[in-house]
Image 1 (cartoon, rainbow, N blue to C red):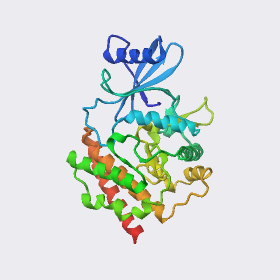
Image 2 (cartoon, rainbow, N blue to C red; image 1 turned 30 degrees about the vertical axis):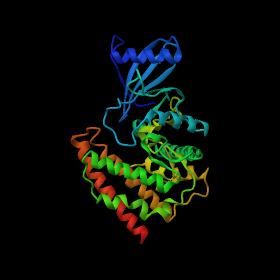
Image 3 (tube, rainbow, N blue to C red; image 1 turned 45 degrees about the horizontal axis):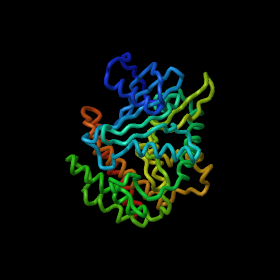
Image 4 (cartoon, one colour; image 1 turned 60 degrees about the vertical axis):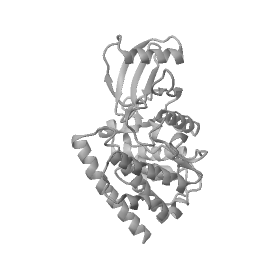
Length: 343
């Protein structure tokens, strides 16, 4: 995981240091941690980079305690991440290797996950060092990668965590449950919405025939923005895609939803390099009216998540103000797009 690294204090009797060392011993046996670094950049789970005396570099991710405020779909996220990485790896995508996942339970107040570390820098951090040619080549490879991930077929539609109940036998029912859950979260956290909740809740029925065009529950990362894409290079050589990280938001559904997560603020389907990479594996992909309706629905869903999570994450100041203004404009624009597409 190539999040921004912030060196921690030297090893000592700190509880977190000892807990990390104990977990490593349980999984790997006797090992020596020579450097323990807190990784920033995550918005929910905490992560530490553990460098071992034998040269291995591992990431230990820990979820918040069960009592922490969270959205309905944010249950057992590290189990979802472990599942995503295992499935994506089998499909040939570059992702961290899962070494161990431990669910919360007696003696374990919060679930945790141990992964290999992907060397490199996030695309977000490396952006200013990329030439236009670098970007074009990398976006092509990214399109190939997410198309490869989408070849994985899940057992159901929706989120893989049965406890939340956000799944179904078909995509319309699963997406309805997912959208209604975040609308219920808005009520629970007293978040004002820029459109009538009943209008938003009715969208899956209104466009159910378009959702029903999805006939296979494909694996979708749904959070593959530039902060979760790792790039690397040897010396001054060409950049390459080291891999995708943080698959905790994954679900099984419409593979087109990946385009929304790839560019939460824009429209990835309009990126010729990305789409050329995707179509190199899926040549018959077309962005027709049905596809554009579904993309708008997924943008409504992601925008609602980004608006509502401001409260449980306790965002404030400029970030909270920006989220409020941006989400209102984004949601209004997507609803207008849906009206136009329906007409």
